[in-house]
Picture 1 (cartoon, rainbow, N blue to C red):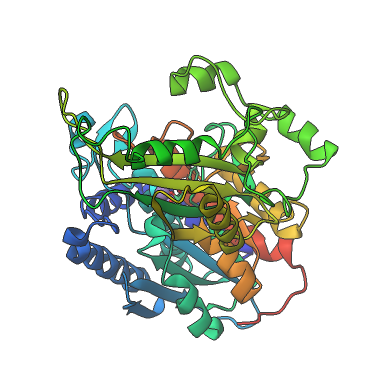
Picture 2: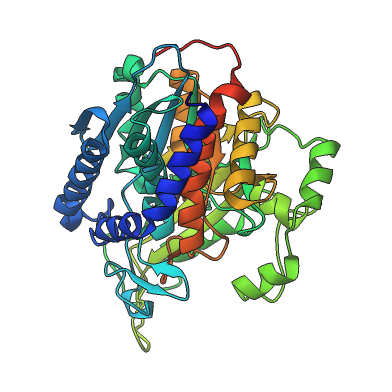
Length: 471
Ligand code: BES
Ligand code: MN
Ligand code: MN
């Protein structure tokens, strides 16, 4: 008689024997420059969507669809053969960040190269490689037993890196299709290959633009300077008032809804294998800076922040040009923690910045993007299946951590579909997401496939001993 354990074992052996094929397919996907934010890559983004749809069909998923949105397409596929089984909704994104600065890449960003056991390419870790591991896990099951031990649905989107702008309406319009027992996302990192990590909280994001307009055109700073309020100066003064001397954010009401950290959680965070000296080396900063009263790991994952992402005004070329600029612009983002809401924070930011604006200039505040923070109770039984899966795939018990980055879909799944998400990442801290020379460790990819096989295999037993499907 065939047991679930046999089915898992065959899939694992098959995945091991087909490593080369799986890798070479991933390299094909990495060759497609699916940069979602650059209009000149729209056709490439569509090509990547179609490539994934073809993969899904090839491995035996059904009802495969490429849905066009107002932005980039969403790819969906499913295996729902056994209505008595629970359903896992796997999410990933096939879009990537722009590769710039291209000169700093050791090999071209869209010509993947393997050096020292690492796959170098834009999107290798974020998120093509991590997402692909789940497709290959399913393939390994279907090619050996012709079946899975859970039902699965895949939703792979092409707009994560631009804030998943059209995914909210997609989820609202396809609630039935996306119904599941749990969501599974691999788009985060672990402490190390022998220190896998389950993320139970993500920060949200509110991204704003502030524009200050003064004179109707750039002016000679000698003829006019002294009697015209300089927009660059005004902007800098506004920005300088967004933090106090303790590194706290001064926007009224900003911290109102922040859920405080319990002593117990602070102790747990302090136990994580986080190395502050390594953090300084990695970033190249002389010393760390942040909100007083919190450790670095708390500052980068469990506390809200405000950062200036970019400033633009006046003359920025080589040498000196005397000019009083007509305008100045800043991109400001805030990372939010559970309890805070992205739009509410945007409104608080707007009101405060407007209150700081002198009547010598016009100040416009625009909300550009956002995503809600997320928290998933680490005690739910589904987490035990993830722990077991990591133990089988990486040979070590995972630690639980918060991630400072944002994945907007996790909040959407919670709010729209009532779905909790298991964040089972396979990346490493030095994968250089969004930066030159992004890479994915080959070992992460292979062990990720095995971990996914084990999660899908263990899910029913560990998570829901007597649950029937809602799909
Ligand atoms: N995969 C990242 C999220 C992430 C960042 C995980 C750092 C682990 C470490 C995701 O693709 C991402 O970049 N998210 C954006 C979201 C934004 C565009 C709404 C982010 O965090 O800036
Ligand atoms: Mn990502
Ligand atoms: Mn990203």
